Length: 63
Image 1 (cartoon, rainbow, N blue to C red):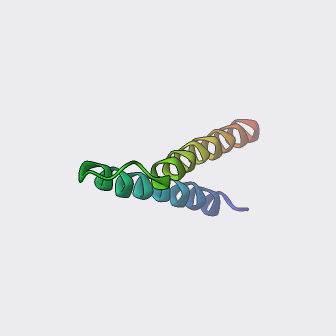
Image 2 (image 1 turned 120 degrees about the vertical axis):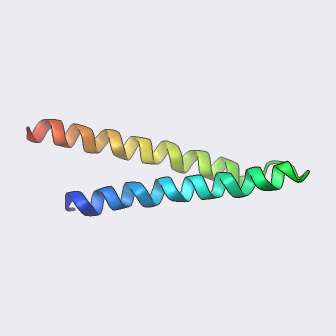
């Protein structure tokens, strides 16, 4: 997978995590209980951080 495609994947996963977390926090602010969106959002943010670390390792090995 090319570097640009990999960075786009990281951006998509990160954006999905932010969006799901934001939706759930908005619902929580209006009185609803935290739902699955916050959990999935957190997992997506952790996954994007892991993908970014892998990308840094690949870049460091290439240099």
